[in-house]
Amino acid sequence: MNVPSLRARLGRFPRIPLGACPTPLEPLERLSAPAQTALWIKRDDCIGPAMGGNKARKLEFLMADAQQRRARKVVTFGGLQSNHARLTAAVARNLGMEPHLFYFEPRPRELAGNLLLASMLDAKMHFVPLGRGGGMTLEATNRLVRLLAWLFVGRAYFIPVGGHTALGCLGYVAAAAEIHSQVEQRELRNVTVVTAMGTGGTLAGLLAGFTLLHSPIRVLGIDVGKLWKGCPASIAHVAGEVCALLGEPQTFAPADVPLIEECYVGPGYGIPSPEGNAALRQIAQCAGVFLDPIYTGKAMAGLLDLVAEGNLEGDVIFLHTGGIPGLFAFPQIITHPT
Ligand SMILES: Cc1ncc(COP(=O)(O)O)c(C=O)c1O
View 1 (cartoon, rainbow, N blue to C red):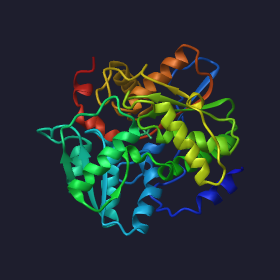
View 2: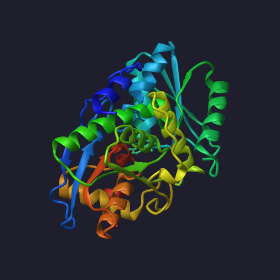
View 3: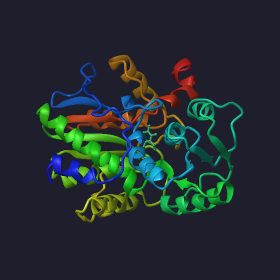
View 4: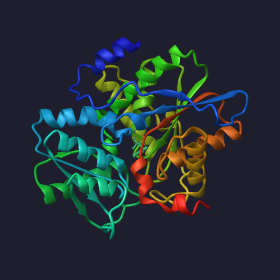
């Protein structure tokens, strides 16, 4: 399938344009890399609205669906610094819907970063300190939270954590088409797109998109959370569902999912790592670009390590998935850098 026909298939789905697309693809010229490697950054942090990030692309499809179903309330959940929750709340407010956000940790004494922005949006924030349910699959967690949310909120449009549904992932199929075109325009060769992996929806959408386009572009996910049991299986399943939605059924096996698990997570999901913080400062000081300590800093640390070890060559595109509000929840990264 070529880019116009993929876009035509995507055009069959209701969609609320949220992102300023295409987002820029910029060279990271001052970041040192071996001779055979060139580093680029794809600026989905600049996508808008409400401080941007990857979830805007997923919400274009999910919130259009919510609107079509005449939803008055929208429910989702995530970690305390969930960018997805912040962005869902912002888009819901803009569409006149009431956002409900669930967090499975105690309410912090002070609300910082994404939590501060969510409270500014007057999102209904439910802190239910049950813990993260470690060891469960993402699908089982979604089922459980959906039930809980129904008990707390009643009738509402439920968006799984991270917007991780086939419909939401269409946003990253559209991004795959966008990247494919930018790569062709710049005549880049031997291209790998590297992205942080939380729920895996971004990775699933890109994998499905590049596969449908028969694109030579590879994608690589870097696990930043060690969050769910059976991540590759879940991503493979969603990528297959995405292709089926677009009328081109494909089967992906867990082994087809290009993912580095656990290596760059650091102390755990939601906890900054020294390597991630160092990468964050390096990118700020070499490129004037801010990353975040929970997702993109850790993924960039992985990218830089893979490049330094000679495990990643050619044109390497870092997908900046946003998350900058999270930076303000961890001021010690800046004030006590080591
Ligand atoms: C800034 C940022 N980057 C990356 C991710 C990971 O995206 P995904 O959940 O689609 O794997 C998330 C959310 O989980 C995020 O907020």
